[in-house]
Length: 271
Image 1 (tube, helix red, strand yellow):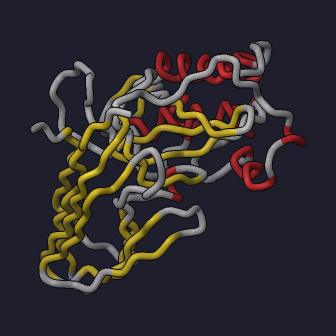
Image 2: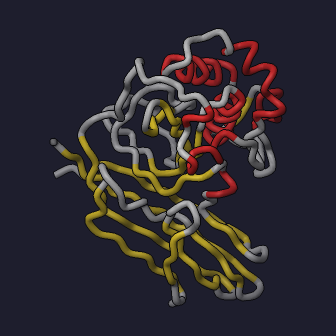
């Protein structure tokens, strides 16, 4: 299979009044079809960093952000297939009693995904559709058309119900709303966070950021859907999975350091 090489990474500039424990989740999840060729984490001033795996199998890093100003940097070179994710319009929705035990959790409400609150709308809009891949795609089509992408339109406490009512959001909001509709229809759906380069995509120049999409269980496997971009893409580099954005936060701090700036990169290496 032909592959492409992608430079991914990020840089955080913090200012802290006191030493502040933190968890950082920016490392690619090392599983196929993505291969991590090289990776490095640095903190200035020099600070110990250790890695652990959370309960969802995601790689995380722990450190204590030093008092004063500091810079946390992560860089990696990864190899990805020169192909978009799989699509199969015949993949069938499973009955709840046929779902694997470890998949059931992704049918339940979570902090930001609220199938109980959005259930009536989900069944009204999508209840009569075929119980297969096309039903999930119809959910993505609706969310993509209903929400308008706008930075600053939602906050860290905004739920799927909030953005459904406002009509505005960012990629995490598109994803959490689509997940909520899926779960309301007993379709397991989980939140995915990662890097998404603009490989073979014509877009207006914009600052790179982390991206969110979802994986949905149909048949006997997980399938990738992207309510924000709503099209198959090349080069997805997954960082973590969870019930919603609270499970895969890029940084979790046990205190209140000031994030002065953040830069994210996900660019194809040419030559």
